[in-house]
Figure (cartoon, each protein chain N blue to C red):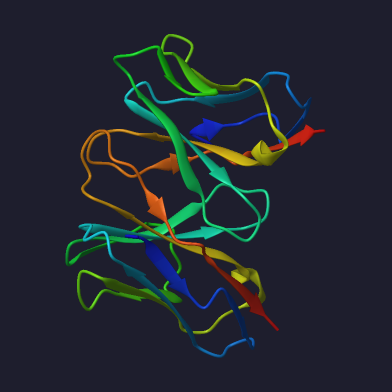
Amino acid sequence: DAMVIQNPRYQVTQFGKPVTLSCSQTLNHNVMYWYQQKSSQAPKLLFHYYDKDFNNEADTPDNFQSRRPNTSFCFLDIRSPGLGDAAMYLCATSGDRGTNEKLFFGSGTQLSVL
Amino acid sequence: DQQVKQNSPSLSVQEGRISILNCDYTNSMFDYFLWYKKYPAEGPTFLISISSIKDKNEDGRFTVFLNKSAKHLSLHIVPSQPGDSAVYFCAVYFYGQNFVFGPGTRLSVLP
């Protein structure tokens, strides 16, 4: 089945130790998104790629970076994780940015920072 | 400033009864509206959507209603089943922009 796959499901890192989360998709979608979700809050968009074009949200901290080496893969790099970065990180894709698009989500990576 | 509000953080309903989840938005430019369902430790999954040219869309037990003048969206689940227990997010969208999510409502369907 075509899908969005995130690895790992659970990630534990130490305060200040860089960490990378990965996402792959078999949907051949143009757009890939990274969301941060904290408990009882709305998923918050960090950035997205429209094909190779990177789009950063204005309030995304510089500590968060992303790479998209090809259509299928996208990575989220957290350069120096702080305790406040502990959250569920969701990768999503959509075919385009037109009307009637849907987001397809991966299962998420739950990040803990010790 | 929240563009999308779901004012009920939680809702409990008896099995077999109707569940009604509500969502309010602030920007009249939004023209596409979706509901997502999320189980613990999983990503959200798409449930149902509606475009601004309609006021109702039905899919099996799930119906979404849109009241554009009130900027209000609701999801009806009839009959509710224990497997419907999850967090429900509404999301709104307009062309060329990004999806905006509400904070979610946790639905518990009691046997």
